[in-house]
Image (tube, rainbow, N blue to C red):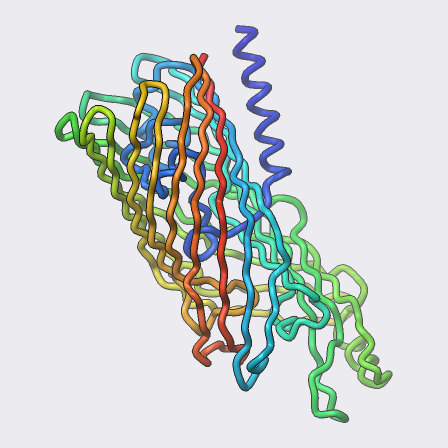
Length: 438
């Protein structure tokens, strides 16, 4: 009993650490994050049928139905991220090049699974289902600064699930997820100067949500084994509309013309907190997988992920009036489309206490050309992965590395804000996990 209490205290502490330390980043289509465990990462994310470790809470809750030991798994994914933009005519112009700031992200994960009866498990965990961060070099001179200088979008899922292996061929799992998150946006506001016929910087806009917003979602999964060598898996995570409340600050920038500065200050509540409200629509995710035991040492899996990105149609930013001054509502139209991601992976066991994995994926972007911008320059991605794990008694150390190549993404002159060019991006996702059974 004392050991169980210590374990639960450790789990709670690790959840707090995960929520406070996680950095946002988008690695799947749009701003979804799929890397939740090293073995799954090593297999290209093709894990919905396999789902044989505690990260099944994300990939397929049914996978924990047959777990027979109290198991704790904790890990992190290190993500060096590189992106640059090459401008096109007429604006910002051929020859204009700029890079995002070099950043390394580290979304963590934690899972605890414990059997409460034979073939019945309760599991508890936290992971990052969505995230986004873009920050441009030299933001004050960045030519896209009126669209975005920086955006940080963090989300965390805290899940509680029940899984059961009902028969040799059928397992089920389901449970609620508490989604927590915050958002930060930075850009400059422009003002048309009639004396020079140019737009000039009038204010730096800094929007921050106040604490963590929360919403309850849910997840479910099923595993079917029509024959002992074949496992079919499917899982579902529900969509959520997250409402954020916070403050916007309009820090006034001198235009060099006192008359213009006075006009701007008479209309906008500068240098003070403006209560702000933002809603972000997060899509549902359905994962399908088929795993085949080719031989006792080799397992192959193919997955298809379907994401309902069409719910992310627009982002509305509303400002409350302050001192009789009203900032107009800002609406960003996205027009995302539903997408498929195809994944394939294999796991080979050269020894009983060791596995080696490789994988491949093709991830379709939901973003139309019109919405490709400094705020979120998304693209189709192709990924190649490799990894390994080794077991020492009841402890396993696991590693997975996904090399994610974003296809070059030109706006083709269609960007709705007439900010056109080509975005080029690469990411390296290095997952590390430690697992122990008691």
